[in-house]
Amino acid sequence: MTATTHTVPPALSARRRWTILAVCCLSMFLVGLDTTIVNVGLPAIGRGLDVDTRHLEWIVDAYTLVLASCLISSGALADRFGRRRVFQYGLAAFGAASLLCALAPSAGVLIAGRALQGIGASMLSPVALAIVVNAMPDPKERAQAIGIWASVFGLSMAAGPVTGGALLAALDWRALFWINTPVIAAALLLSAVLVPESRAQHTRRPDLPGQVLLTMLLAAVVGVLIEGPHIGWTSPMALTGYAAAVLAAAGFVRVESRRREPLMDLRLFTRPAFSAAVVGAVTVFVALNTTLLLNTLYLQHTRQWTPLAAGVATLPLALGATLCAPFSGRMVGRSGPRLPLLLAGGFITVGGLCLTRLTAHTSVLLLLTSYAFIGIGFGFANAPLTNTAVNGLPPARAGVAGAVTSTARQLGAALGIALAGALVADTTPTGLAHASRPGWILVAACGVLLLTIARTSRPKPAVDTERASAATR
Image (cartoon, rainbow, N blue to C red):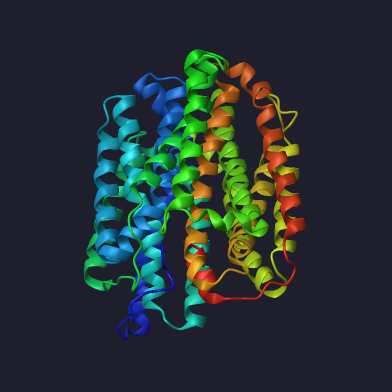
């Protein structure tokens, strides 16, 4: 993707520029919300469609897997064919898929609908930011817009369980998807009226082999994690999955290293700071999504809480993420990524350790404290990881770096759901608390890994608003 090589935008009034930002943030909010809103509704979906934990994991991961696979390609298509056009196609696809999910008569149809949602969402997240960058040529104003954008993303991820719980209390699980329809309709209308068309001056060629191999790789890895507890980790089918993952990875590296314009520039991974940032992005979202899934299953199955109560329990997480994200951005600009990454790793580690002795009667205060610590850690993590990914890169490569880290976040979300689901698969409600303890150890381990990454971060990086704007993609 080439967020930094865009066409010269027409002069737009300040009111219109900020309205464009609002429209694009609306789409970003939907993408993040649908990554987590379904979590709190999983028990209700399971009862409504009579499916087990394995199918519930696929309902969540079908969305994140496809989204992770298609992010980079969607950005490249938008640069070539027009960002507003692809943005509107994404809105339409997301809306149609949401209707399919809301009307799904079976788990298979719902999983297919979630995959289609992922395709639509991949056309929204990177493309909407490119529209914002194109509409705001002033670096200071653009930096403000990027800060708002990042805050909306963090808020949407954390607000999903609360919103889902409220919808389930008032209606049923199908409302989790109906809610998207009026928002999509409004965004389509506003984008047609207010958003100008733009294209990149230099467009990259489509990389179909790389796209197919990346999708195969992600699907094989996550598929084995989800199906492993049911089919056996050493069964012929599982061994076939391992082989498919290895072959897809080898094929992807071979194909991408030989293309002039690859889907993913593997040379970026020769930079230790960039590789650390990608690992960090995966790590943070593994911790977040492990927390959200274990919280939902534990509170609703073991403690018999309502979906609304389970969603409200994540409010400390949402508040921590929302309040700390702006502080993190200012800290990165002032002294570099190391301090906020240390804070992120420390809070996530402590949050996970709080629940490593979880029982069916663990104090609610301890639960809320743990969620608050994890939310604070999540809030402090995003800005320094983005900064670390692009620090030292030329602006022309920052857009690709940002796209890779965005893909890493969604991969982390899918892995978190798969790992947490594997731990509690086929567990009775009374045994779920004990079975989930390794999951909280995993969350703490994610925090420790972030602390390690923080030690490799530069204390005082050069600030480049062009890189920062492209990287948020």
